[in-house]
Length: 98
Image 1 (cartoon, rainbow, N blue to C red):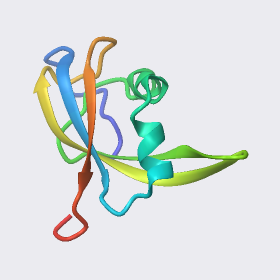
Image 2 (cartoon, helix red, strand yellow):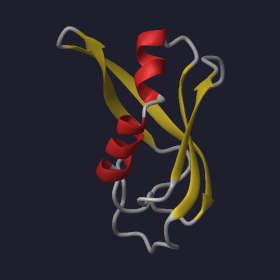
Image 3 (cartoon, helix red, strand yellow):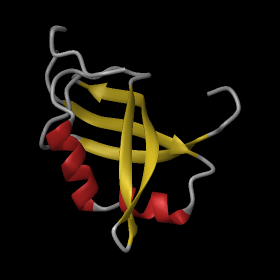
């Protein structure tokens, strides 16, 4: 599901919770927790966002390789846009009942 910039915004979110597959290995989880990855998401996810939205992203696997990962918006607090001050929190998502 892509960001829809046509929806009316309620402003920048204070906090957004983004999930990744619980089965993701450490080489996927570790890059997500970096300030640089959060900064990348703040810059690349412009416009409004909503719970359930999925982002097909990748993380560095080291030695020039990448690993694909599907991130999903699980919760949004405050507005509905990701802004420079939006806190991004990552948490594992169970595979069952996704």
